[in-house]
Length: 465
Image 1 (tube, rainbow, N blue to C red):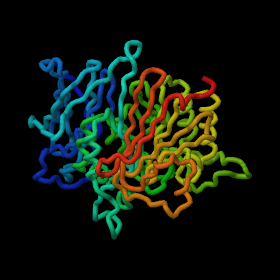
Image 2 (cartoon, rainbow, N blue to C red):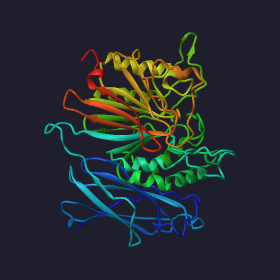
Image 3 (cartoon, rainbow, N blue to C red):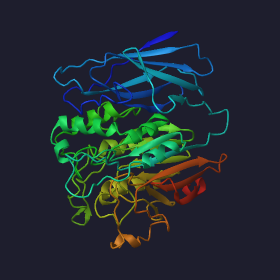
């Protein structure tokens, strides 16, 4: 038996969340377990426990050698004795794993085994480079998860829709889930104080419909305005540092920002693809600054910020991935988007597009959220090859009907890709070397496929290569 001492990590101890339901089937486990990032030799397992828990233990083993048991433990330290039901998020990093192996694990809280209604297992990445063809894989994507909470919601018809869509997502086998922002919605009573933000995170993460989805595959996340602060907020949000702290506590990405530049941006590889998770809020200028001054792009209007843009450009040019997915909370390529789009930050928009063209960077595709409808934009003028922006929104937040808006007849939209109802997306990557392809799909709340579109890697090839 090997024992790994792990990681008390992230405690949320400043306020009372909801009192724990005495009939809650998992006892002191309030939400999770959720799989975070997965690599060849390491993975992250996240969960949230009540503050009256003492010791949390994860036992895990390679299914091929079940007698070789590993143990990770964490102590729960409640700093505020007056709030006994505070949710405490814990992030376990399980290291020293075998590559390309299936692992199982179980959770104990104060020596009590915890049972959840889905398999607690994961598979580490295979070392395929220089050995075998790139593995095929698939992932889900979505944005805008609104969970109704009557005391804090606006009066009238509930804004959150059928959460059972999350169960359909959980039942669909994929390698990971990509959360593309507005993964929860801070209300006025939430973003006005740190304790309100604490409450909203814990409330949303306890949604029973989302537990299987997060527990049966890796999860990667970015944010947009509503899970950063208020509607359309930017770098002036007074609690942005605390918002960043909460994101790190509740999501288990590999990294967040750079050592000297705060933010949530990061990247990860999966097979022969790479994903660039951007932060479109922490360094963002206000939307209402003019796009241009004196007929020139306004240099003071920044979307990602100069340092993050430098990181993104350097990461893209260094990447050898066949497909380079740039994940952004709001749209990138849609000129008919009235406000919340990189297109309306022309200094950075042209900087990025010119860089992709001038440096002959192939395989770039944008994945975006925010709009409360889904569509696939194909912009033939943005770069030197067809540039795609796959917008996937919303999971449960109220859909937007644009049939009476000029944007309804957007000439850049791939015909048949507009879906103005709750939905989620799936992308599959497959094919032999040199002929890799993407299959983009959207599914409605019943899990019914509503459209499908295929992109071959040759279509995303820079003329200079």
